[in-house]
Length: 254
Image (cartoon, rainbow, N blue to C red; front, side, top):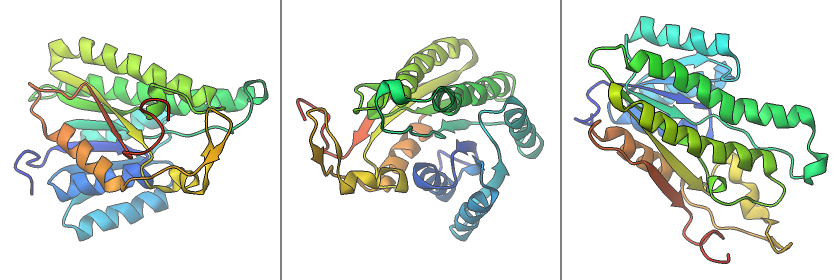
């Protein structure tokens, strides 16, 4: 068990698969009591069993981050079970259809904004209220940004807009949380090898119109980075971290 964790409580949204699963298991393995949140109870239960096999402590709670009542119920459960929250990893998110901007449906736009931005706000709002009143006071919020928080992919207006917005929210929470010992940082991830990024290995559109295969990195590197951010004392903060497959087209001209 990590001495820095020492039984602290961490909430991971979108914990049923991909980056959320990897981060939840790593946090549990290093001494965090982890709350796994997501829409699919069966997937969360499977991750909780994996965590317990690693001698970790995990609680699976079905939650739709786009629904204020569902988020409120999640935090009621956290209060009742643990009485506090030390780390929130806002990881839940979704992509959109890779179509021209005029072909993006209004319903899909709203769904992406609901998940990627409003969901992060609802969870952050609830965590902020708990962290500023608990004893000891304070906590850490980590937002899953994206390389798309810096530069868009072709045909990704909704996703890119929400990820740019997450950067603004991260800064605002970091500022507003100072007086309550609440810190907030952002991890921008590029091409972690998960089901969501599997298409990169098959070839994806580039800015010049070509289709190209992109390198991927082991998702465990992301989990290790989130653990590093989580383990910092509240007197220190990683404001922004970019972790990416070294040779993916981002730096320079691709």
